[in-house]
Image (cartoon, rainbow, N blue to C red; front, side, top):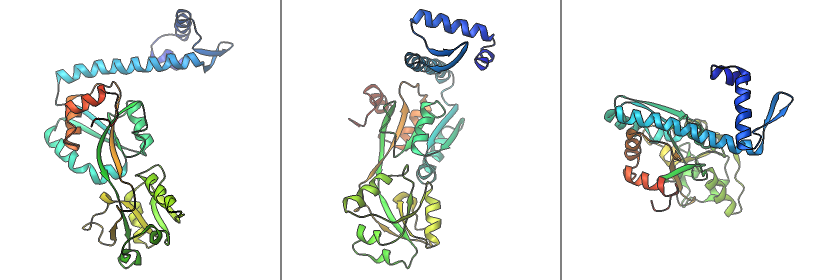
Length: 295
């Protein structure tokens, strides 16, 4: 209550009075009390707070509308994404965007897929780009971007690189290094081994493709890696075998907060990333419920 009063430049009794007046007008208690202290949010209070949060976000949208029309080529674009996307997929898109919009400041926030979604829902970021979590979040409009699959990496003389054809049974014979369960299509990896009745010996997991490659270079295990994270030129100390025939493909998606106002350069970034996602297509997805259907 004291923090709220300070933020509103008023007194604590004044805030308490306004809360009481609102509760009286709505006919429900928003907060549970113990004496004069607020100790919890009631069930109807949670619904009231959710509506209040949406109203505050809409107020932010009003200011963004003004910025959009007063200055369409300047501002800040904040993108929340995973390490693999930021390191291996986005650099070329970011370069092209900066050439087209030199007055827009770009912010890249990295996290796991759930953190990435939370950044957008909390207003920290304009866009979420990830593989997991986005499609499962009903509060986000989701836009499919591209499909990708996996490869096996190992030290150049490792016998796994000579397996023809490469099988899950052959991979399961070796210690494995791959992504943490929250990252980069790990669900498809687990599903593939389970479907063959295999229990892989995962000895190390990481959230970062570069970390996985480093420990594979040390010959601590065989790596299961996103295919876009391997470069023959940059990863000369590793050999690679395509494994797309062994695992279901994964879909990377963009997530946008439902009902958020997007400035023109946000649409431009999306289209640079996925040319088929024009402003018209994005708007249709937003008005149609935010699913992959029809895209």
